[in-house]
Length: 70
Image (tube, rainbow, N blue to C red; front, side, top):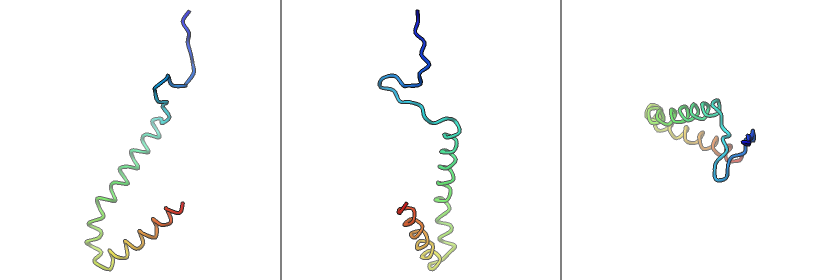
């Protein structure tokens, strides 16, 4: 008789699927949003002027230091 297995363990040398459709969607959505602000940065910095750009980099650096502490 054939052996049927309901185990979810991957075969030797294969990867286990751990992301479903919802997780994959949110990763893609987050990547689009994350890339969107990067493409808009040059416009924002040109409109802000020298002082506004310096202030933006200062605030961004402070936020990134908080992220780095986490």
